[in-house]
Structures are given as structure tokens and as C-alpha cells.
Image (cartoon, rainbow, N blue to C red; front, side, top):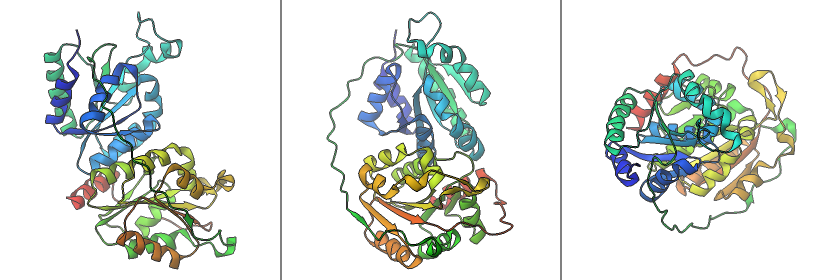
Length: 378
């Protein structure tokens, strides 16, 4: 017995679940096909990015679904525990049970098959095996939806052949509109702008309808220190996920302008998100990369960014507009140009070392930051 995937998918959509992100698995292929055919689906580069993209969509007012193979659940642990748990951002998950005892499966799934449900429980996520009986499965969905409405995540563990076949519709992919990299080569180190000056410029140049999302570490803390505002989000933990979070929010709220403030260490951790963002190409997203070549929040240990041409990476990935910025004045002009002619844009800025002495931390709790931003967006 198997579930009618279309009926179950419509049951999800009737409860408001119309945004999906994940990484494919053969056990979930039919639910994924339904989502690609009928809803908004973001094909993430990895499972952690998928979770963060769903989180961004939720902040934008969309109930989201995360799909992954249980072997990929390990990639999602960081955002599930430090982003979703910390900010109280719920997600409805469907995790395949590869390597189930008695199933003749591939050897790489053996251990995960034994510990999948233990992992979910350790993350304090309520879960259930999804029934292959359609009526029972829809009843389980009612319960899962109640949990989500309480701002708690719920996961379904999905066995082989739970869903019946859904044929993926043909889709015509558009060709990315990519410009050349504009701007000059990086200036000497002595002329690199300070990060706080850049953050201040972003705050002063943008209006309250523009959302500023800052990566974890001193970037978010400095943004808060300069001026706390309802249109700002300060990531804690979940290093590398700010790009995927920004993508989810940008897709969910095309009526708002979104600025993702990223760092070299953060982007290096999840560079696959560049390609995903470029593929979906939200015109209302400006991705600003601040590169000081070190992990400044943890003592200044070096990153390997000195050998990476981030602007060329963004251009090769398919960003519509890529710019090297060497001064505050150039940044102001770029923001004004992007505001008047929005397109998916990437701005690279080499920044000076150093941060403000006695830098504080946000006094507002992470989940309050999320709730305040959601209220602001409404």
C-alpha cells in the first residue's frame, strides 16, 4: 500500500505548506516531483542550506517543508539546532529511512538506518513514521500541523514505497543574465574600509522596507551596536547559512528588498549556496561579502580567502550583476543603483581588520528578533 502523493501534497498545501527545499532521495522522489510541479521548490546544494532556506521562507510568512535522505540529516544538524531551535522557527521535515533493518540497501546507509530516529529525538524534534495508509497519513498531518502552529518542528520518517508515482513535468530553465565584473582591483590594505563603516552605510542608505540580514559573529553584533531596528536580523550559530536564509526570504517576499551581509569564513563554509541563489535569481536580493581574511569572532585565525576570487565565483555561478567595491562612496552608489534597478547582485568588499572595543551582544533574544522582523514584514 502507498499514499496517493498528489492527494497528500494537496493536503499539505491546504494547510499552507507551499514552500519546499531539500536534497533528493529515491524514497522521496515522488513527493519532490509533486513539490516541483505544483509549489515553490528550491533545490539546495546541501541539506543544511535547505533547512536555512525553509527558515527564511517561514520568516517571510510561508509554511515550509524540508526534504532529505537520512544520511543527509547529519548535514542539517547545525541549522536545526542553532537556527531553528534558537530562533523558534518551525519546519515540517520528511526524512527517508535508508538502511532500515531487513531492507537490502546500500552499505553507506547501514549506520544511519539504526540511528535516524535517535538523532531526531536528540534534537528535541517530535516525529512519527509516516503511515502508508492515506487516511491515517492525513490524520498524522493534522497533528503535525498543530505542532508547527506551536512554533515547533515536526518530522516524518518515510519508509520505502510510501508514496506512489508522480511524473516530473518538463521545465524550461531560463538562461541567467550575467554581467561582467565591474569595479577595480582591491586597494592596498591601508585603504580597506572598516566593517562598521560599511554596516553604517547600509543602514543609512536603505529605508525600512529593506531587510538587513547579518551573518553570525561580530558582523551581526556590530550591526546591532550601530543601531537596532525591526528590519534587521542577527544570525547566531548556523555559520554559512545566511545566504540560504536570505534566498528563502527573498523568494517568499518579492515585494521587499533583501540585503545579505556575509563574511569570507561564512561563505567558504557553504559556497554551494552561490549556485543555488544564482539559479533561482531573486531580483530583490543583494549579496554583500565582507572579506577580511580571518575568523575575527574567534580570535583572528586566518581563512583561506586569500586564494579565492569570490567575485569571479559569483559571476561564474550566474549572479546577474557582480561588483568589486573599494570605498564607502562606491558602495553608496551601488546601493542606489540596485534600489532603482533591482537584480540579483553580488558585491565584494575587502575590509580592514579590527572591531570595536568592548563590543556588546544583542540584548534582544534570537526568537524575539525573528518575531519582530516577521511583524515588521507584515
